[in-house]
Image: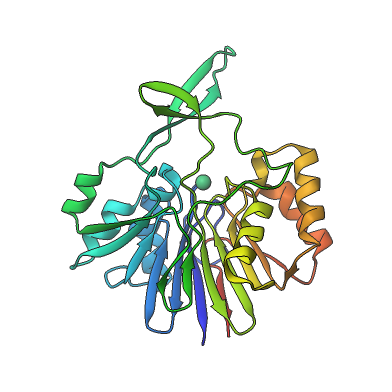
Length: 284
Ligand SMILES: [Fe+2]
């Protein structure tokens, strides 16, 4: 079995000519006869440019997984659905369409509430052929391809929110992004774990993948780790904890950041790669 992962959208573009970067993530996964799109970036780079330049045919995919309901992951969803002639399963957590915000500082020091939720309504996406598959539980979507469902927070250092908010029952409350789930692909050499933004915490996600599958070997952990948004202390704790796991390849993207990348590279020099736009990881 060969699994091929192509990075379509990410914060940095690789060296191939004409690729575009954006703050977002989209991974195109080919396994056996299945073609799965994991997230859709903010939209423009994937649809108008990168898929074309990377030879990825977005008109013929089998399923879409949206990691969580933020616009840098779901922004291209309507466009991708529109490219496909048939109805497509779109796997999400039930909280994906909640009104989500981040609090940012204005130049005068005041707080600004920025809308970072999914830009489309469920009905609008269904009119483009989305058939939503909604679950909070771990389950298989294709043979040996699983979704984690909602990820338990078990570590004591991975506090999941500071500046994120969600509007629930008319009230703005801290958002722990409970809707984020990850993809697990079982292979003979261990699990391939694909991360959207890792709001639940990298170590929480790895631990839950082991709990679900009973497998402790990871052929690869690839995607956004959210480490650029955390304190130095948490970054160090996360990287120290990574040493406790058997991971053959750590491929970071999106919200990892240059500092975390440098630290992970220094501690796992023979097992690290940056997964930028145009990166292709093939695992047998
Ligand atoms: Fe993100």
